[in-house]
Length: 442
Image 1 (cartoon, helix red, strand yellow):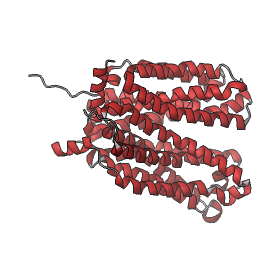
Image 2 (cartoon, rainbow, N blue to C red):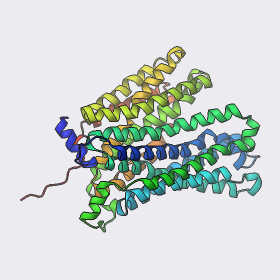
Image 3 (cartoon, helix red, strand yellow):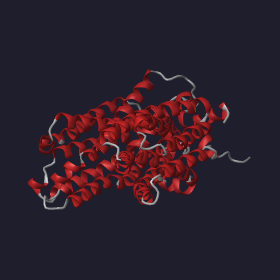
Image 4 (cartoon, helix red, strand yellow):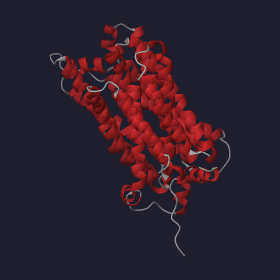
């Protein structure tokens, strides 16, 4: 795509200003990324302590597999709540302002996280313990459903056009950094305290600290300003009386399909390469847990770096060729990684390489934000992203697990296919040029 076309696409999301990033932009970006990191940490830290939570919040006489299943069911409830929470938060984000909903989403994450850290266990209050835990996870899911699309829209609408991709990539790296923060905290806790201490009380620490830091982030977001594009829209006309979701489903179905397909690529890359692979390495190739987690931690770091790089590159060479290079590279490095297993001597290096190309997931918000007009942007991105993630994020682990029974290279084939799909989507006109207002005929 030409520089002129690329700039025109960026103007749709970031405005026509071609100034460099200034101090106010850095403040907006840093506070948004910090909040995203803490919120994603709060959401995923649950899974790192799922075994302990299972023994404390369910009857002791239950079989281990039943406790684990019920605990993971409560974890999954957070994902199922994402679409509803995301749509409601986005609706009001389009009606009354990005900033208010951006602040509310992190509040809805911080408070339940803090409450989980303080909840009485099954031994103290019986069946009320798992029910309260379930309620907190539902609230967390609703919050994360609004946070990610809200953060992408908020930062995109604040960013100068020339640094649009870099800003969104940096924000996305902060969000993925929450996964790394959670894993590091889990490693530190298991290294510092005995299993008895963790079972008795120390498991509460990551939730209490996450909740407290989240509330601090709520306070810090008070210092952010509403986005210029939303303010401009409010000055030009009152908010449309029609429900944003109705407008989206009637007028912007193409954009919804584009974002949904890109979400399929993103969810596959994260779920399979980052979340599923450590257990796969241990179970199928008998790689030691410590080695698998070490390699995974390095891949998470390169993923975080990759988010920034691919966003930056989209500013330089355009979205189309960045999608081709990023997701095409993911296909190649996926096979390089999985086909050379166990290969422990180069495990970390190859895992780090594929992690870097997985960082091209930051191209989803680069494309998704500008695929919708300002008036319904938050709702459109949130609806398409969260609905697709609920479907593909939920089905992918089951699909890969079943496929793996007949072909141990199933993860490689699935991720590689998604890489090809992501590269192909770069040739969709809407992905490159973004939403363009229709010009009335004379």
